[in-house]
Length: 257
Image (cartoon, rainbow, N blue to C red; front, side, top):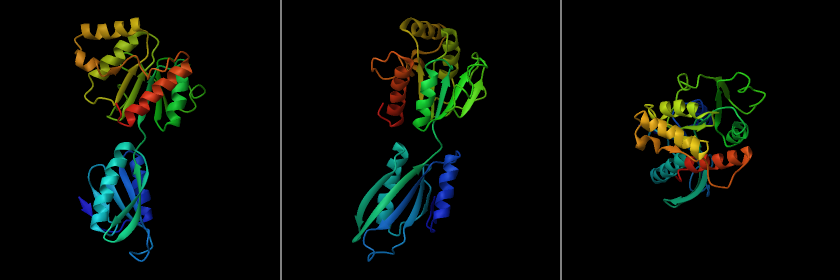
């Protein structure tokens, strides 16, 4: 679907706010003429939605086509860009500003690693949710950067949480029994999260994955679980482990793995 009408600043801002609230992601394109003699001096805007819908025009069919390609890349990377384009004798500077709701980071377990991971996750722009089955652990005093703090039963931790393809989940529970219950629900869910990582010793990981295999979960589904979790930076302390996990989250979010 395409709408060739003009897109004003208010309409562009409203589309960005809607995307942040969970509507279809959109890239706001703004074109400025490098040479005022070629076109009007005021900027023109175009909206390119992840669904393929386009609203507005930058005033030139060739410019629109090139800008749509830029928007597509920006929606994938999530990065704002500025590109100089020459077409039909005119020179333009096109700003592409992708807008979408923040990715969700679910931290399952509110122990020592969860504390720095929640802080780093918020700094990276994730909407952080911390889950635990103990009232005294998942508190605003311990996790001031979290968006949500939920007390859950680890036998069914995701019953009240909507998972989607942009959900990142890190399991840092305190026992392999809870790892088993959480992983069973995740790998058999109808919607698969973007990232599933599990912290634990080799013995604990083997125990959890082995129990899932014995329960009939296919090896292909279990191969989606990233364990050992995080990039290998020889991390030892909770803060270092959180950094290694956060680095892997960024790698996955940018589509490099």
